[in-house]
Length: 527
Image 1 (cartoon, rainbow, N blue to C red):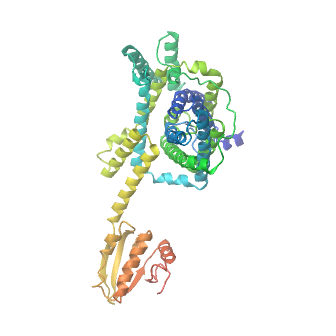
Image 2 (cartoon, helix red, strand yellow):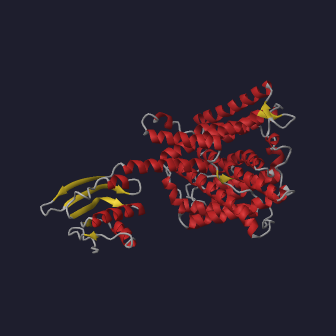
């Protein structure tokens, strides 16, 4: 038994009751979201539900973050919209069933890319995401989760456009949403015997169904379709195995893989902070890839980590893999046997749960530190939040935030380059360089030297500096050429081993004396 626990990273001190109840709560919350995301992409609700089941099960077993929930997501669904438009343009008359097969092929290819990223240990690069980007990502996502619930307060008119419910219906909906939120907020103060989210769903559902109150249900969000289905039968996507197919699906598979990994690894970091534990990023990359391959084979649209459902799970007390497994199996049970019951669940209860998730997701502490954070970090946080909210592209939002932060870092370090100058008793002029020498600081570096006015022997000391990149090598090369043209000799001193390696690798670019240092035994290269 211990070997089984170790295999799945499940500690012996697992609260099985909490894990089971948390899993059921998550399964209920997965239903409307999985259906909504499938409809966003123009696919059958079952493709979203099957994806939530397959990805949730595989990542719960193999993933690098116990307690994190994965499934069909809006970020992935949006990617398919562009591909579907391209398919309709290239193949007029293509049916939705044929389009779905291309989606499955794209998901499988994306999974292969994600596994490759995990095996190449690329998950570590998530460390490059600054805290200000994390703040913006989390805040933006909280707003997106909140805004996504607004359609539940609307209904379609005859022309198919959404409009707000009639006043009485709207007030009933708002009332039960508030009741759900009050239960979720207040129940833990009384007892933690049952997850408050599950208790709220049950109480509100019993009241609405028991008293026959006419309000919006899960079935009303499905455009007349049903979530009922059987066990997904695996099979390869029915698409032409040709170069043309690859050129169509590969760009979208790359985007799906990238968006999925970024969202999953950021969610992993967030759960790490909440639980004060540490997940395994590269293992999660492999698990996400494996899950997407299985999703494509088992009629699912693919997906990644879901921050909303993950927070529901964690806030309900779940910490092990069991809750995710229960959620996936529970969802499949709903599909196969409980569809008529689940379709009658009131949306007010599920919306109330998601509103509480949104409130819990928002990093309220970020508002308190606005005046205390560097202005650049505040700008990054706001930009990432706005991109997330208005473009609904989490990967792009994070990328923009990282680029702005990186440019600011480069600018600040570029200003740090300076030089201390003096002439020793032998008449040699010393330049002691401080700060990193890289593409951003080479202009300031060059301005420190007086080639025409310097003596014939010049020593450049890098004990407090470092040659970082190719631009820095070229800057040193250009400087030495200027000295050599005036008949003066240049020496480099106190180069670190990696700097020396860069210079040796560029020996056809730069020719310069490297003085042997008696203390640090720096290797000598003569002209």
